[in-house]
Amino acid sequence: MSRYAVALVAGILFGAGLAVSGMMNPGKVISFLDLFDNWDPSLAFVMASAVSVFAVGNRLIRRRKHPFCDLAFLSPADTKVDFKLVIGGVIFGVGWGLSGLCPGPAIAVLVTGQTNLGIFFLALIGGMLAHRTIIRFTD
Amino acid sequence: MDTFSLLSALVGGFLIGLSATVLYAGLGRYAGISGILGGLLSGEDIAIRGLFVIGLMTGAATVFYGAGLPPAIVAQSPIWLLVIAGFLVGFGTRLGSGCTSGHGVCGIARLSKRSLVATACFFSTALIVVFLMRHVLDG
Image (cartoon, rainbow over all chains, first blue to last red; front, top):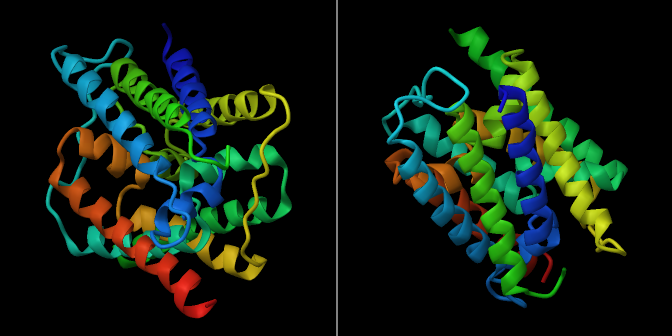
């Protein structure tokens, strides 16, 4: 299977998963995050299911010397818990709590063609570019 | 899709976990959407990342529109709040090196300490923000 086919298939599975699970719907995500009003536990089950599957898959695949279509397994550059991780998480959490949208669903909801969701996505890209600019400035 | 469905949550989560497994098995990379978007913006591996994103939208659209009348997906917030939220999501996920898929699914599945901390940070923050927005500020 070519590298491109892997990327495309993985993407399709991910998008389908977001739609099937209801995680494409920010209202459903907020209903999970709102513990005190009509609590919807979906997100917990989605994550439990996804984590379980990848935990097994990751373990099995790691027995190989390298991925099927590439030379090596990627290792994350940072291994320590640091300030950026925590602050980044908090900042992301604020945005996620305000909107019910994280990056995956932000892409998925573009297919609904709603302008305000397109604007959200552009702002998200803007935030990523802003971070990149600051990194370049401070290095 | 607005009412809780255990089956949808589990199947959707399974698909997401499967996506991560395929990506890791094929290319040795973690299915972290913020990383994929960030990499696209930096011009790294545009073809692979672009295909994943296209696949994501395709998979989401297929499920969303394929099962009859699509569910209502509404982002309640005014545009200015969506812009702020989007920016924070983009900035925070880059600063924190991950999001719900990267840290929450892939990282936790690997029992990564960084990801466990990051996930705790953005989840707890989002819970607090939602509580404030829905039960303190809006009444």
